[in-house]
Image (cartoon, rainbow, N blue to C red; front, side):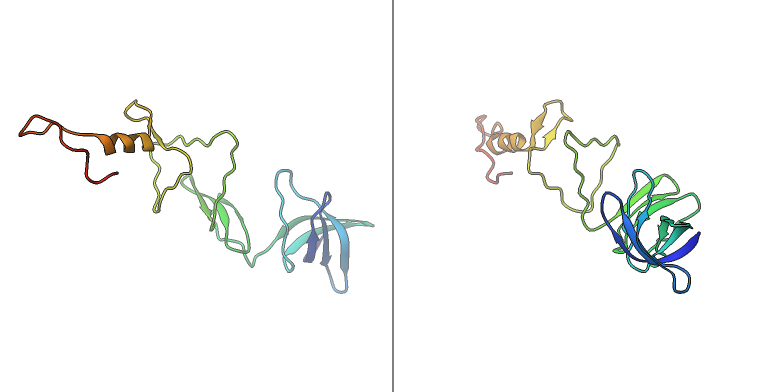
Length: 167
């Protein structure tokens, strides 16, 4: 078993690596094994654990201490060299840090939580429906109702004009 310095990793059906090992030892175009369901492509300069048994040479693990984030005992994280990370923290907190988070769900996304908060804006291409009152009206339906509504006039008993400022 050898601690190597990764020179390159090439994507493919079989992921391949090139690395240096002990003094004057190099490995080129060898297989890089990874755990099922997880994949990574380490940068040049990262370290790898290389198993060298005769002519059978594979890398089975990699690490890059240059970008690794600090975690507490029992925590788990995945991270990149750009600072993105998913951190499963103590206290049952999951922290996702990135510039853009894209979730692709072909049927729906459900949140089972009593509260959703944001520090910024919410935008939707489709309708936003409020089911709280049991009416199931969309925001555009509620806006139309508001914009057309009137009230009984207190002095004359007749209806007031529609609001002078639309919603």
